[in-house]
Image 1 (cartoon, rainbow, N blue to C red):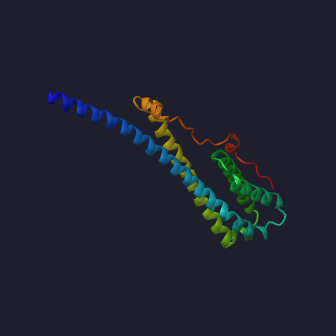
Image 2: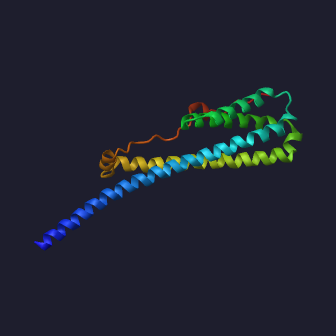
Image 3: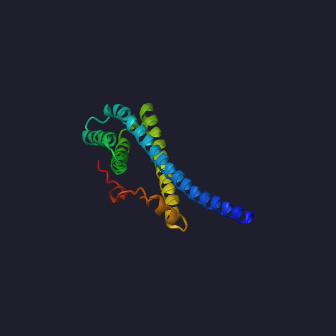
Length: 184
């Protein structure tokens, strides 16, 4: 009789442990995803904060390139005012495209290309772009781990029981995949 009670207690503790284990795994993965999304936002903010400095360095050299400067200014405004992740990614992609244009046009201005401030800002932006790309990859890796948990047995059962639903990957819009056309 005592042995049966011990086995029931062990089985109950094991079942409770499995429920707790799976719940905690989902919570950990959810927090990992939220953290990686926050890291993307930090990098996008850093990039946005560098734009006014870049524009100041460029304006004196590119007086007749108003269209590109306006495009960058508008892209920065969109990035700063973006609310959801989709809007932020869209605005971030617009900003990246505008920055590529300004760096390509800078090739035609030897004095600007040699300007220390411009070169430093260009290097900082390049480093931030690398960090944004890494943060996006880390986010999508977290989504993959989470989604695998929600699709595999027994994780699928626990996900349904606890109300954890599949999450979407960050996607790059088709327009951002196109190589920008730059005309002089």
